[in-house]
Length: 374
Image 1 (cartoon, rainbow, N blue to C red):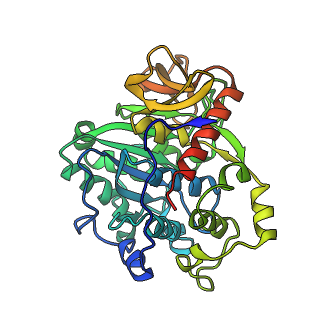
Image 2: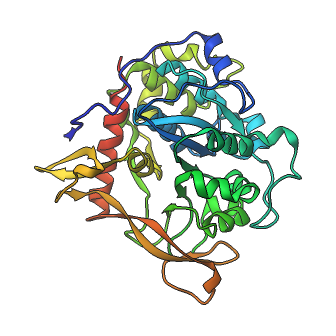
């Protein structure tokens, strides 16, 4: 059993009208009105390679997790790889999530479409229509009266370009930058290969990085997995339909994304999707960014504020580590010969066994998604 001693999931679900959802998630300038900041929420920018149909449905689970955690105040969503977004827009699941939760005015923006030419590339030579992602990052940081958390999954292209344009602003306003990419033992990794220069530029930036290697040597690996039915079975129907829509690769030209949320789910579709296994990487980033952690107390995993951990055993932590990044993006924890590339940053580390971490994250995700009120 997973115990949520406090309310961390959104407690009110309002199905917005289709028009409201479409307008709220339309392409807008960062200077336009956005959702009013929460007085006590942690301001956050989320950069993601979220698509529909998805490259990897873990991004759909991540988006739902982000919307489920009340402590996080979403100031903007940057949709990675802008040219690809035009054909397979991540705005579709974002529209659905805003409709389910009743959230309005969260700005999304398409990111730069091409790889950076060097770690110092500002991306200014790329098409104007795809500059909105970098501009959104810079705009949110300029306007915020507090430090902002960034969680970046994917190419890191827009984060790197934003830093190269205004390094002083990012050093002043970024409180934490969670980098969900890379290999902890020098190997190749998909997100890094999307834009090696961007990865190198960010990892050498000196920003307050909380690095979450996707692969590598244990315990420095954030990957975990679950059976989808174990997490989805007791979720509200709208949320189940959100995942069914993405996993069946529904055509938005034929099946409206928002109206589909209330439809009954065919038994054979449910059986097939529930039986799938799903690998995940980013869950711990959302938990940690919200000032929460998962601990073992009295034989149960419990979600608690980080300051209340005490002597309890956490499922994961971030530890200061010296990291070296080579020019090709190969990253290692131990010191190598390229001393100018050395950075001291916080690296993800699961505690106990990989099985312990997997169970904790699975139960945590289940709690978040079941916590969406009906």
